[in-house]
Every structure is written in C-alpha cells, then in structure tokens.
Image (cartoon, rainbow, N blue to C red; front, top):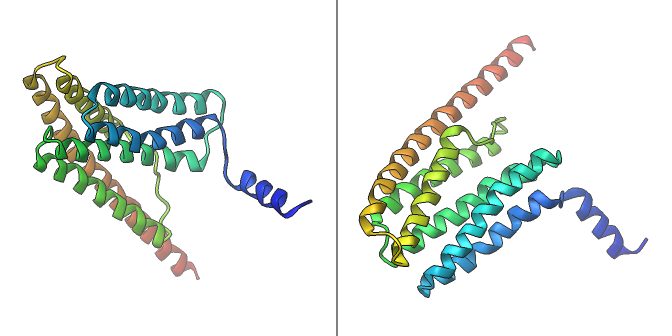
Length: 203
C-alpha cells in the first residue's frame, strides 16, 4: 500500500464523511458567499442563498436520523454551521445598517459566553450534552426568521415595521436560551465535581 493510500484510508476512517455531514459542510461553505452578497447589496441572491442554507439545515438532521448516520462530528458541525451562518449574517446586516448595534452585541455576547463554557468543559474534561434543546432550536429559528424578514424588507417585499416584532422575539429568546444553557452548564460542572469527590472518597 502506498503512503498516499494509507493517509487517505486514515482520513476516511477518522473523519465520517456522509450525506448529513456533507450537507452541513455545504452550509459552512455558503457562509462567505452569503456575506459577500450582503456586502455588495445583492439582497435577492443573498435571500436565495440563505434559503438554500436553511434547507440544508433541515435536511442534514432528518437524513441523519432516517439513515442512522448520526456522528459525533455531525453533532459538533451542525450547531457550528448554524452559528457561523447566523452570526455572520447578523454582523454583516449591522454593517449595512439593517440591524441595530445593541442587538448584535446581545447575540455575539451570548454566543461568546457559550463558546467559552464549552471550551472550559473540554479543558476540564467535563462531560456535557451538546445536543440543542428546545430553547436553542427556538432561538435559531427566531434568528433565521428575523434575517429572512430583513432581506424581504431589503428587497422591498415587506415594510420595515414588520421586522420589529421579530427583533423583539429574537432578543428575548437569545437572552433566555443563553441563561438556560448557562444554568445547564453549571449543573454539569457541579455533577462532575460531585462524581470526582465520590471517587476520591472511595479511594
């Protein structure tokens, strides 16, 4: 067996490449395309790109469940793809003056806190459940709905006032889900500390 074949075989065995993960990867690749379209004010094409990304978001999970192709990599990549797409969209739409800066600060701060918590959990080898809860799913839905509404406004399809209730809903869910995940993380840390104490006591 050649060296190239050995490396290829190792990569295939270590990285689970399947249809769900490929759909998630496509969503990640669409992020710079979407951002570029926003910056150049091609809002119709940006809306189409976002809708395609949203479709892949629904398909990857459904395909993974139906074909039993759920992987640990997919569990990490799926929310990462969502965060990359939505955070990039919200920041870029703020740059082109569609979203108020304070709303961007709320969204980015929440994501930064959750990312820091995940990194701390990994560094401390704390076992956490990374599966999204109803709070997280609702927040993602609210954020993507708000971004779609802004693009519909940018293309002249709906008035600006129609996006205001969606902004309020997005902020409420973003803050609520942030508090929810933070409390959940604290529970995992406390549970892990208790287990370590029990093990130490038995020794």
